[in-house]
Length: 296
Image 1 (spheres, rainbow, N blue to C red):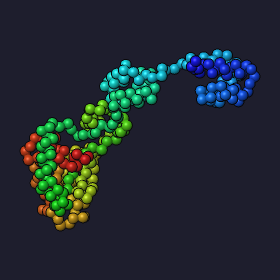
Image 2 (image 1 turned 135 degrees about the vertical axis):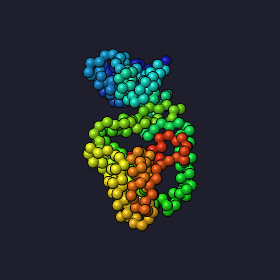
Image 3 (image 1 turned 90 degrees about the vertical axis):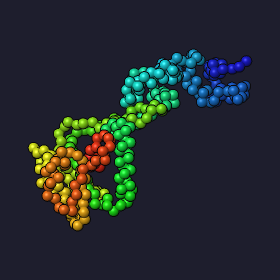
Image 4 (image 1 turned 135 degrees about the horizontal axis):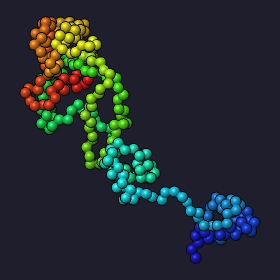
């Protein structure tokens, strides 16, 4: 006859009613059944139960979730939640499907093979042709300046205007999304902002920041401001470090940079002002060829 747990519990109850101690009960069971006997801790626990008035040796029913909820129906339900909202959290899945965090983790990583990563910020969405044109242009510049080792790069400065916003940016954690195993890393186009702001013009060279010029209140960025206020201040800062070198100042194709007034402005003869261009190629958003524009 194969003895089960309930049989041993009956023996323990019988010895409890006989008045045997816990140790005496355990020793007697051990002498009769040796390696099949329950542990001393089990004997002690059942003595405690019987002392509290328990008479049943059956397992009591337990409330709660079933042992496992990792079933096809729940797996598909989690998959649909992720497809509907890539930002969905563990707590939202738990509240929606009434399954534990442990089960959610198992479904996500063992069955769906998803991971949560941050979206990569990009300035614009480009076509494949525009991307290729940009790569070709960058290769041309690398060749021209000997992979950046040419000393001529120390004579190049760049700058652009940008709004400085007073706003609460989205934190990195809020930007994370669920991605399935066969999906590419997501990207997110930089969104516009419409809160209080201050316009500045920032300039830098290969060694870092050179000058920042703030636009006065109630003024606009135009050729007059650019040539009479902004550029003289920038030139003054550059000349503190490079007094006699020929300087190339690059900027994008904004109207204040390409107007006749800017082109004919009286600047030091050692200063050459150039606009970014892509040799006639259809690169898309040419203003982003300005390092300052893309960086700001």
